[in-house]
Length: 343
Image (cartoon, rainbow, N blue to C red; front, side, top):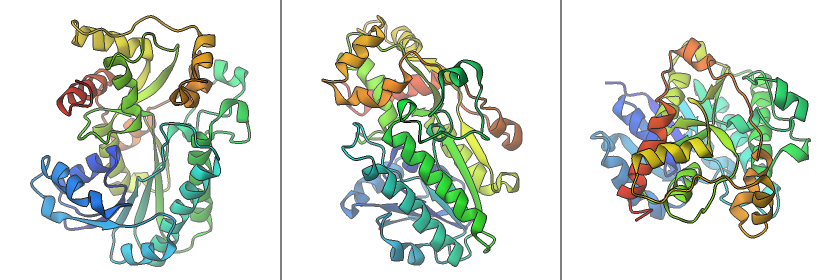
């Protein structure tokens, strides 16, 4: 039995809880952090439904912005999975409400990990740190990969969340470039994460499916994203942690691109008796509605735009086999009904 210790931030999150389950199943001891200890019993019960190794999980309260706590938490730790990140359902009033905690949190963890001789830190970034801040010409002609970065100074083609992911990841690589401890760093950059929802506190990306199933959207925007199943991202995070080939590299996590229309068609086929929108909203209407529905604001930069990425590096170098995008959509919908998020 593998008894190596992994510190995992954001154990209550959609990706954090799935990654914890897979780590426990592979024999790791996991120290999972959350911001509010009152959620500890709930998340332990949820995770315990999916693994018999729940006794190997310790849950602790820790704030990303508190420096000292991370020195204690990284002591005698082999690996860190830094997954916690603020992801708003609506635009924040001040972009620094996202940028500062994302950047400082990553640096606090890296500084402590370096001081305590942790072998490797894996940071969950986002394709948002690669594909935004682009010119119209770039979007039409380029296929982006791990060597590309979002230009956070191009405000026309970015949002505070995309800026926060980019600035935090750049700060992490800058720290690593100056660090002399031998600490290894790997970053994983997922697209929109779907897949099985474990509880009512679901991942933000699941809103794509929820809004199509709950009758709140009469029509859908002309928009699409790279999609990936949460179980596949968890698997890639662990490969990025374990495999020597992954040291000091970036990996995109995507199983392919789907438009909202294609997601709707998959759901219509699966639930023929349910009213699921398939009419597309004109782009100007999406912009107009965003004044009344703040949850539309973060997607405006993607209306009518396809951002093309090469998602083959993780498959080629690490033997990663992501679940099909169709499975990510269907398993998300199935569990949305099972957990009662949509009746």
